[in-house]
Image (cartoon, rainbow, N blue to C red; front, side):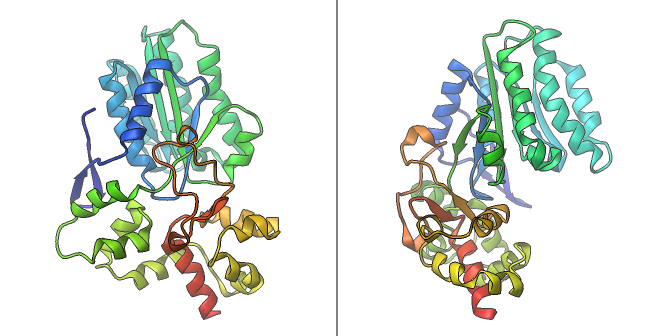
Length: 335
């Protein structure tokens, strides 16, 4: 599969690296279709967007009409000869902020049906990024059901339909999972070897790879943030504290549990942590809770280790990256 080029940072383009197993899964989806919409969840910045864009290119190579739609950023990629559909997407993307996001999200449900019904397409792939923020988390289940309806009740017969949605919103799992309308599939940060390939593509002087690995846990976005900050870890941690609203009130209220969790995130699972705290940590995208079995078939690409205390990974709960954990630890120290 041809590897695409992506912007890691403004002015810094890199080739899509690693994720070989994930790309093999794309080929499987192309051959067999997705029986249910695949909803990929995982840490912020772990590479879900990069993977979807690479998958869009690969599915086109495999003979699919492909739409990758990112409603939140008013962006789309269309690999199709149906110019009228592309024009509608472009018009929706040019709408005012707020209106454009909702229109693009809605069109993502419509384009597949139109390609089958009006344009005679036999293979259609719809890849949607961060759509639940555009339509509202309360409508996540309904949105996924719309994709499932296209698979189960198409307007015409087809050879293949691939429907994939990516989200960082951990709280959507409960809403989607209880309906059995989708195949919930986690994706983790990059494995060590692949992350090293990405690290090597950064120009200029760099800290030792071992240090960068311990700071990021293989998260590409954290790598980019560190590079942009001149490798100042403290600056990145402070920004994350502000973004996650780790206030003195929050840390004082949950101090006892947070102090335990920064040492072992599984304490949130086995120690009887308050449900309110767990939901709050998930909503702020600080942890991934209820981690899946590490069998590769349950994951997109390579699953994380069963446990890695250095990176803040437990069997059933994990900090999204070591820097997420450090932000909470620093907030505790300053309260």
